[in-house]
Amino acid sequence: MNDKKMTLFGLAWPIFIETALFMLLGIVDVFVLSQYNDLAASAVNTANQAASITAIVFSVISTASAVLISQYLGAEKYSSASRIAALSIVLNFVTGLIISAVFVIFNSQILGFIGAKGDILRLSGEYLSIVGGFMFMQAVMNAMAVIIRNHGMTKISMYVTVGMNILNTGLDILFVAAFDMGVTGVAIATSFSRVAGTAVLAVVLFKKVEKLSIFRLLKPFPLRDIGDILRIGVPGALETFLYNLSQLVITSLVLNFLTEAELMAKTYVQSVTMFFYLFAIAIGQASQIMIGHLTGAGKTDEAYRCGFRSHRIALLIALGISSVGALFRYPLMGLFTENPQVIELGAMVLIINVALEFGRSTNLVLIACLRGSGDVFFPTACAIFSNWAISVLGSYLFAVVLGMGLNGLWIALALDEIVRGILMIFRWKSGKWKTKCVVKEN
Image (cartoon, rainbow, N blue to C red; front, side, top):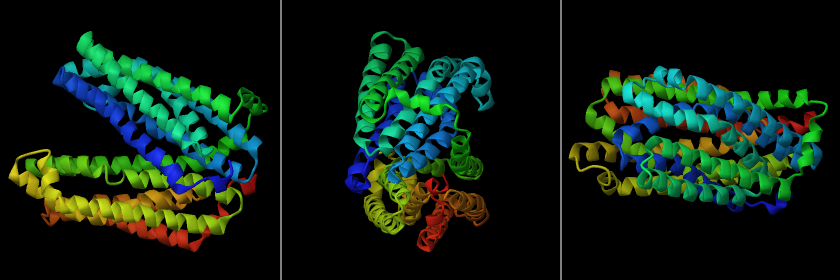
């Protein structure tokens, strides 16, 4: 794929829709079951928390293969790109099979570890044994989507996600409302939609992008490629893991020190702001593809300009949307509750959140650009420091010690994002990432 044929908008808008729909996919299951049985809805939500851990495992291979494929394509080393594609499918399939086996055999122990008990444990185990058993299909689907997307064909995975949402919703309604299958019906619907999505992506991949013969490129087995995948993928996965861990610590602080009204306001604000940074996620992923192609082709000056152009666009959109959210903060909070105290608390946080989105949009785009160039250790090191020294300690200092409550918590989160964002701007400006291109080493 020639990088000249790629545009930020052309790559980003399908990724935006796909990301939004993928987030919706899990919400639909819980919503349909909530009309059937509140306990069943809670059980599925609990099981999905356990299943979400696998995203970190799969991200090691997916993140690295995305960088390697885009750089090899930019360097016009098509055979190497195909070899990485084949390797990523095989590694994801094997890893997925292991995880599926673990979920089928040890689902009760896993769910018990995260606190599920009684009927919640029974129902969530019923769901996880089915959905978890087909997790290897999700792994293969992720690998194929990454390959297709990094060839510039972002619309295809979007169309597949749209189809999966429609199929999943229809089957949810059929199995739960018509056949009264409850949790089992939702689990079957989710698994079947993933199998269907994987099948469609496989047909597209091996008809339009690659040939089945790419698996012959794995002989002799490319151990060096595995080293590259681990070198690129592990830092990103570690960053995600430690971020999630820091959020658990912050959640513990919140549960112990904030009032019930503040907890409710936090939940509602997070539901609103989730849509504020979807654009930045899409622009970041699109930028990573473009930067990978450009650095692979040796066009580092063009990549430099592309990174800052993407950052400016994401920043303007994020600040625009979050400012509108701050302006209409009372009506937005009123969508969730009529409690005046909760509305007032959430409205104040939505004002603070404008500053947070400045940092968050910067991080989502420039960290993706750095990864696309092969510069993975600096963002991870910054994230580890900032998450714990600013986000966690700051949350305790502002929210608890200084008694600022939910406002203090959001100030700490905003400072974390802003400090990291400034560091990412300086890193991109320094140009040190220009020496990190993997294909120059091979």
